[in-house]
Length: 365
Image 1: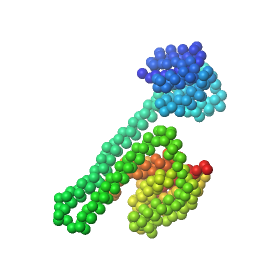
Image 2: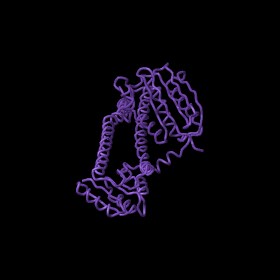
Image 3: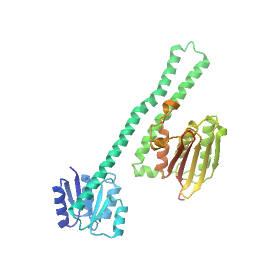
Image 4: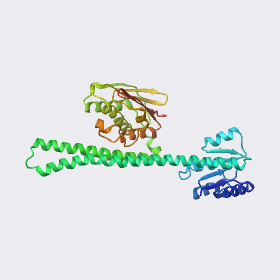
């Protein structure tokens, strides 16, 4: 049974409303002023709140502000029911995050339609969230165990070779086997670190203090860091001649460490998914918002469906291309950009070109 909280200081309005809603099959709560209404909402966590605007203690706008600032009540559907019907009042209420704004007098049919509409919308949002959660669970269940097992099997297999036949193995072969163990261990370590970082970012997204701390970092000379990361990756891939840089510079709102992570993942992908001998272009331009970085490669590209489905633990056409990695790195880079108030877009033409454009917010001072 859905529970509705009615916050209304006029008992001649509040009591008939409660009676109507009870007849319609809702569980009801009443509050005679804004202060009590906030307390009731925080204690009982109703499924929906009907609230007047002009009230003692706290007015309706203050009630809504208080509830939206509390993570426990922030998502509760909220409908203003008030005699204040001016457009400015309506705009103010909706700007604060109200789900609907009804003016008195309001007949029972209009009120119930608004309530049921909110519940229907809420059910759709819950269903979408569940689908996304199930998709993530499925991706983790299918991909993560494989990603963990692959390097771990390499470590165990190579170590067993050394243990079983160490007396007969040449020094050079032992070196090669231990290098293989080290390489697989590094891959496993990176995967675990990425998994932990992605989990940390999802927690940060829901914690205002953590988010404020994350956004307090800055990079004073991003062009130097972009050049260093891109050059290191190009050298590692043996493709220094493929790298083309055109970089402007301005201070941006992301720490050196987090920017480095974003660059490693996105520039790394540009090299990973394009052939040697094809160019990788990086340009950085100062814009009103801050700094816009564009990464363009001439690789295999992605279809519109693949672009729409980009997410954690996803890698397209893995069996065909035999690429290692879960796609978690891209998800981390995207999340870092978004949490810093930035923006990322991807345009791609299959078998021709992919362009990733990132806008990093500039520092205010």
